[in-house]
Length: 417
Image 1: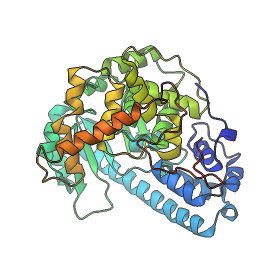
Image 2 (image 1 turned 60 degrees about the vertical axis):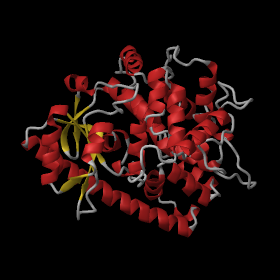
Image 3 (image 1 turned 120 degrees about the horizontal axis):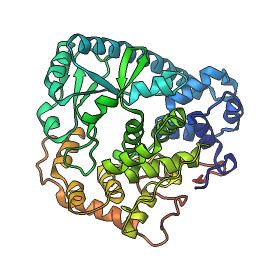
């Protein structure tokens, strides 16, 4: 796959790619900042790609305010301060929670955010996350919830989430500085065709040492597959999510059992998700290439076109793919093998109800606005299948799932990488 070169990119995109790289070095950061001219576009892109704190920390590390307009530099300084304070609060709260679980005899595994920030980034504050993701045994779910309640947390709609989701959200009432906790017993929807069997993770979990103390982490191969799936699961793929996968891959590349990785991706039904994210990673950064196995599931041909249009590198770089839920389901449908189970998931009333709760529409009935919902998905599918948008033209300028505009070039247009 073609790898993007700096000459092909706008200065703003080149800067974000350099800062997100698993091979980032201090050299060249100052000159990249100096080449930037569209500061509004840079901040917008960094926000969409969840790399705003990474940008803010870089300014502090390299002490180059003279190259940056004063209002932008002031805003990034405030963002950096907030990120540092939030990171320390999260580390302290995680330590307290892990101690409470340990005292209660509950085995826990730390997922995603904080463990990635501490293991894969130069400074954990560079990777901002809003919550703490904890995995427990299914049998320990009630006991773990009681420990969170004792610590001042309150669950949000536990009956709905227990039946329709794979985690229960907990919020600290009256203590806004405490991050929410997502108490997992799984990592994928129960009514979907993707299954991870997290019960098998416990036997191969690896021990990690973070600021919160000793923690249990997912097995390396399973974690890489899970993060690759998670990058696309919401239908919103950002530079930070691709960078997380690239950083984990660069860290463990020589020690990973790639046959096990590919087998696990196939067994969980996430092979296509895995392929897309790793092709993006290799297009953005000089990762050692891996020989991805062929995907027999990517048939018929129109699914290839849909997936290509939704998940092209140009779309990811320019926009971060800001989407709403119907397009997420289209993206997942395009990546999965097909059949009755996949169609049932695409039109799942259960998942629809859950997303209505997330969107603050908890009073909506199960059939409310259903015709409009179907019309939007049909329009999205038709847009993806328009002539001229054929796989594997992954560098085409794609606007579905995207804000119009992207990062403006110096001529005032909407240049694409």
